[in-house]
Length: 227
Ligand code: MN
View 1 (cartoon, rainbow, N blue to C red):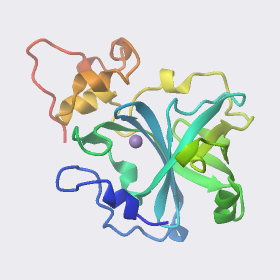
View 2 (view 1 turned 90 degrees about the vertical axis):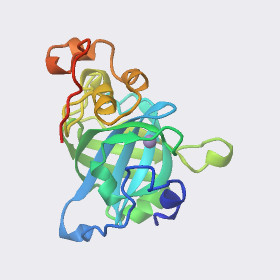
View 3 (view 1 turned 180 degrees about the vertical axis):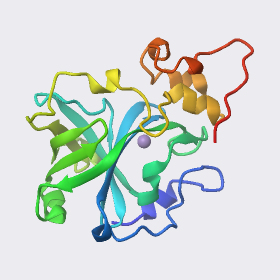
């Protein structure tokens, strides 16, 4: 596990993403981080990340997680990310790798259910418990047969049946950031991103549901500036 691929793909003079220089506290000294970042890049997807051995193991889940145990969501394993990426929310400039808007959609801790995580990853069957703000309870990532060059990168993310499994469409019903309560369009607007493109990742009329009326577009209104 290393950040070599992560660094090769990015130009940190242009992108605001973490460069991976910061050294994380040893995981044994604290809980393991879990984060899902909703990312409106060339395609909308949800980046599912679990901290392990000083990096964030990462999978891109096109449809996002499902709380329904009968639903299997494709999860393509991507390059490991630095641990400080877990709090990144903002805009990656267009033309850069992953250009688009990033939201911290869920976060918290994870607890491996497999005693030997490295062996479970090798085997392609990792069971774990999520202690997130949106996702809770028992889940599994299982490697599946992929295609061509992605043959060993295809996994399925599946909810185990427990008191947290349900029919609720969590990605549609809880579209906002757990860090800032913003929608993708809000994050784009406040960080010089492409608001129109970002808004295609938000549910239709999400901003009209009354939770945050201050985000509604006003003709000639000033840009919100928050720090
Ligand atoms: Mn991504």
